[in-house]
Amino acid sequence: MLGLGKKPKCAAFHLDPNRVAAAKAEAVSDGKVPYVTTNDILASGLFNARGARIGMMGMDCREKMEGIPRDVAGNYVTALTRDPVTFGSPTAVRRMLSSTPYATTGQPLPGCYGWAFAKESANFAMATNWSSFGQTSGMVQLQGCEMVIHLPVLNPANCVFDLAILFASGRGKVGVLCWTVSIDEDS
Image (cartoon, rainbow, N blue to C red; front, side, top):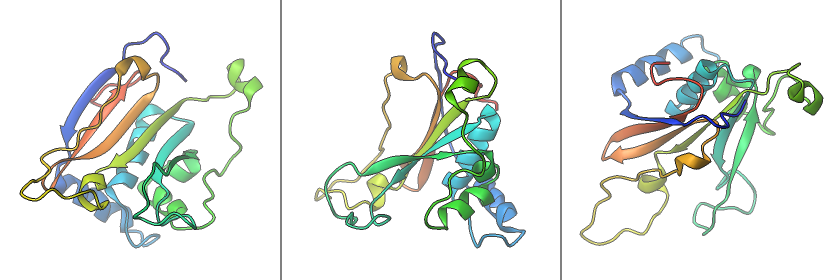
């Protein structure tokens, strides 16, 4: 479950917009959802590559919860605890996010006893999306200035599980930073 004692590997790359578009088209071809997002594709892919039993998906609560409008200052985020039923495909991710209240799991989560004695898997990974933060979140715009990059920063010493962050890597570009303790960047 945790990569305790393992040194995390970091990989960074840009997403190929043509491959993302093809993955989106394939995901909606069955008509179960009208669209999927890049984040839906990334989260499902990471959790499946990891063989995760639990997938944590970061979520900005602005405009999704009563009393938290888009323009309020503060760190209003949470992580949704998902399982293979709700992250098994990009379509499954989108179906869950399109329903309220969110039904984030389709099966019981591993219990402490089962996890501690290796009777149940508690392998997990986390995906979060910062790609629109610097572009659409209402950040202060400085006259004559343009955001060049919004780079996620993480102390690798604190990385004990697989994590992927989508981010705005430049105007019109989306990058991914992955810290892994259990899989390699080819997965």
